[in-house]
Image (cartoon, rainbow, N blue to C red; front, side, top):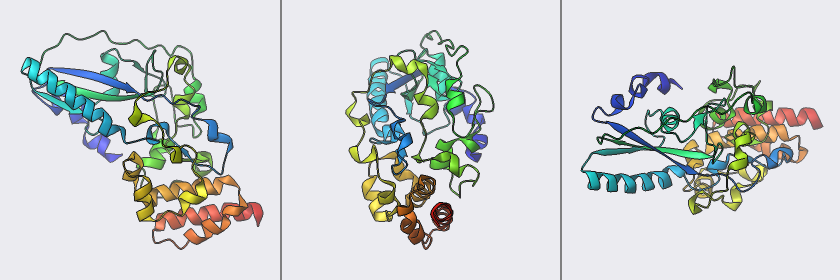
Length: 300
């Protein structure tokens, strides 16, 4: 997470990223699921993939829409524009809150009264001066459902998150071995975690997305851990072509799958874990040895 500190100055304000910017147009797209994102919690032989990653890479879809809108704005008003979708040091959630889209909830993610916690964010920076909208107010009240739902206790306080304990960070961004004390708490989550988002009461107003690019791929809604663990690099790239998961790489992903296998308690997975103890990647071997040890202790 060193890049956060390295780019702190560029996140200080829109002008720090682009000095010519006079206004920021914040936008959001709904990706709310049509089913219960926590439904696989009781099926340890299946892997849980975060809702946002079960479909095509949202960066492509959102950026395409932003570029089209930005092009129209630039041509209509003769102004400069730049578009951003989660790929630059942009303070997306504070900007969305200031624009009135929603507010940062106690889980630190944006919450909308219309769409709950299921929003992709994007921004159009422009040299055009636009009167600001009214900022959204905080509507969390005394609720702490998101804080209590976190499997790894990653919230030291409301509105604060310790990324070092967050399953989304650990399974997506973290490159080395996952700390052993946190592995049992990950359960069968193999890419991201939606627990704090899914329990938000404001989701009762959310409607399932109708955007085709955000609809889940059938093979990623309840994948078998044993199948995923045996992916080589070529098979991994084929399965996750066009998916945000592809960026994590085969080794990091299989590491996650092995931790879920170790948590499954399924003796049938012992040969799978045993075979991966001979994998070329040391992080995969470490996760395989941990999984094998846990399964053997239960069934040895």
